[in-house]
Amino acid sequence: MPEKIYFTTPIYYVNAEPHLGHTYTTVVADTLARFHRSMGRDVFFLTGTDEHGDKIAQTAEETGVEPKQYADRISGIFRSTWETCGISNDHFIRTTDDYHIAFVREVLQRVYEQGDIYFGEYGGKYCTGCERFYADRELVDGKCPDHETEPVWIKEENYFFRMGNYQEQLLRHIHENPGFITPSGYKNEVLGLLREPLEDLCISRPKSRLSWGIELPFDDSYVCYVWFDALLNYLSGLSHVKGAERDAYWRHAHHLIAKDIVKPHAVFWPTILLAAGFPLYKSLHVHGYWNMGESKMSKSLGNVIRPLEMRERFGLDGFRYFLLRDMAFGMDSSFTEDAFIARFNADLSNGLGNLVSRVLSMQHKYFDGELQPVAGELEGLDRELCQAFTTAETKAKEHLAVLAFHLALEEIWRAIAACDKYVVETAPFKLWKQEEQRARGGEILHVLGDALRHTARLIEPLMPETAVRISELLGSDPGKLSAPTPEWGKSFAPGHRVSKPAPLFPRIEIES
Ligand SMILES: [Zn+2]
Image (cartoon, rainbow, N blue to C red):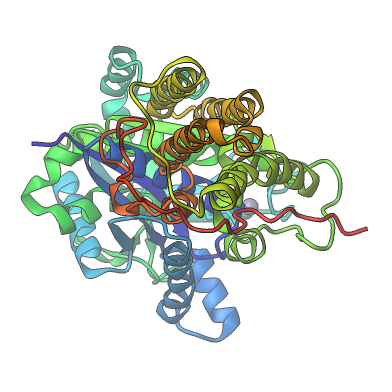
């Protein structure tokens, strides 16, 4: 039985269309899902949309439509964006789906019956933009730091979840399971939060104020507050698709999030799980923010990076490459047009793209596209090049297993650079001119064909479209990208032909 593993992105709130932040988390989850599939694991990958709450109700009203209609539209944009981008999620959940609503109500009822939810009064300063209460010390000049508006005083009766009942148990779990929250900086942040006694979590809104939500099963004049509803998607979506197999995946659940939602995921969610009698997830992986560069973005890219526009202009893999290569997972990074173009031109146009077209051109010019046989075992420089790829594969896998995507790509690009060096040292372009050296020239091009096939295998989780494209150009089956490494020098059948070169990453010319 293949080992089961489960990856999630947050469900995205339908108050904005997909932008850079959403895309990064989704690309990371997709890369991990593809990597673990290529390692033979049974992967379940979930993404989706979070659709209840004040903000959605308000925006819908401003637009003059029903909340559900509004949510349908934005949720549809997320779903189709990920489809167009080839994201390999196994299911797309919406918090307005019937099975999710039923699941949330069932859990609420259970936690209520065992006494972890109670009815009480609460008064506080509330920002409607943030949909939360603010303590005075959190306000800047009496205003919400995000919205720069004065919060309104609200006093109302609500339902509260006794998070504190599970604080000790959560603390113990974090100490006993070092990989529970990664990177460790975020774990320390959570341990800091847990140094103070946890306040009870308000989990409801009266219907008189908000009706766009899941009705509480034990009081129909209230709806559930967003987090208790949203976080349960990770179990409801899995249960819906995998049924009885749910627990086998859940034991290996990996959540991917940005650092702004650490507290709900590392504190609210585990205490909800403990109260509801579910085991805790395996790991929470937290990434940093993309800053939009120091300098003003030029008009051509704009200030909002949209995945479909990036795909249209540069191809999706150029964008994926930049996101995975320029951010160390967990740290902040910055996105500037200059950095994107420099990276694209250097590593993709001049690096990988140039190598592929150079090898295919030589193969066509010297041998009419037909791969020549390699006599005997690989030796000398041929063997060294093969070894460079074996090393890159081992190291890249180690890095991917711990979400060090930038280091995995560095290793693979080291092997690609070794190909360029190999071409210079073996000089097939000279050998071809001398009759007695032609066979050796053919061998060299065959070895380079092996190197390109190996490259396609290595980049598949990170740059899936390019992996398929390279396989097709080599005339090999893209469906076999994750099959065991074929033996170099012996893997192409006699008479095998490669395609004529086609540009993979046309150089981006800078507009002046
Ligand atoms: Zn606010």
